[in-house]
Image (cartoon, rainbow, N blue to C red; front, side, top):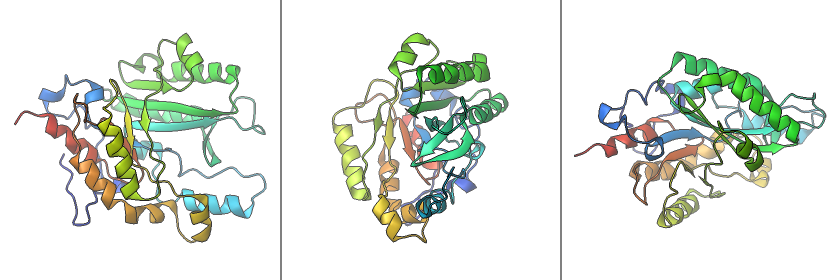
Length: 288
């Protein structure tokens, strides 16, 4: 289960990693550790591999499609790799059908939310001892009726798999959470919104110095590429823009420790970093 660091400080990439049952494969001494004291791999905006929806096929949208999609994994591939915190930015298109909900990351994707939730449910049926955390957020264009529809989809698709059994759904709409006992409130996310990895790590260390939240929380190691940079580098993808900067935050990940301490980390979400880095940290919880 160890994550070996290369000379550049980076960890193995996701495509070569299979950690489909890593939580149940932890040392038995760790089986009773609360989930908010474990180190859990997460992804940032999970559906960048999906084709974008564009009605006018403008040059800008075609460029964003080219930049955002290459090199990412679909949902099942991420779950197979051990990514068990999935970030779902959900939206309803004004021009779309009445109840079709899509994902959004600068642009809409063709993937439907209901289909993706079903894909997660199918995966959990094959891995009943594992726990997946889904975060539903953004909700662009969502009405109260669409929130009710989405919650009904979640309930129908997951049924008795809803936490505490197999899937924990955090729903970032306080009114909806107050009416639905199966949903969890928002999970705190440390998002640095930084382009340079050194500034990102500085932000994360500052947040650690203030003490970790009491429950689940996320340290985001995803770097932000601004639109101006993307437009100036049209031949690059988000992956090729990001990879040169990964060794620095990867080394920071290696130095972290899960657990109940005020300086401990929990979920770590990013782009294009292998999951072995995060899973290996749980071995630090074992007594010497």
